[in-house]
Amino acid sequence: MQAEPTDEALMLAFATGDAGAFEDLYARHRLRLYRHLQRQLRDPGLAEELFQDVWQRVIAARGRYRPEAKFGTWLHQIAHNRLADHWRAKSHRPDAPEDAKEAAERLPDPDTPERALSAFEERRRLQLALEELPPEQREVLLLRLEQELTLEQIGEITGAGRETVKSRLRYAMDKLRARLRP
Image (cartoon, rainbow, N blue to C red; front, side):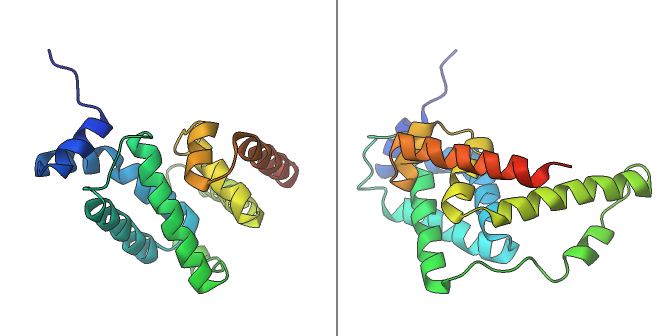
């Protein structure tokens, strides 16, 4: 039984023209990358646009790719840079969608209305608490919790040192705990 090729090996194979290698990379990373962009942007259409742009940049950079870091770290560095470009151009974060309440009311009722409302309220409290975090803290928190990246990988993506990442993560967690206390 042959071991699965690493992401780095797949990217190098793609650089030499192996389209199937790209398909494997895309399948491995698409959901996590899209969820990360969706959480950062809170706009499915915009997340999809940036998602496609990140993959286009991966394709365009295939000839220059060097496996100096893990592929996932490199991919998220591209996403981080693309998000930074977006925020610079926009110069502010969007407000929560105006139809958030209506969208929540359309969610299916898994149990009772009371339980569904309670679960929604908890998710909404968490989302609002996340939105209140400074962008640098929110980004490291989401990369750590959702993408399960190490402090070193997050540092490579954000361009911050390990201790800075650790500090941002600690401050973010402290703020969330304080905000979510009953």
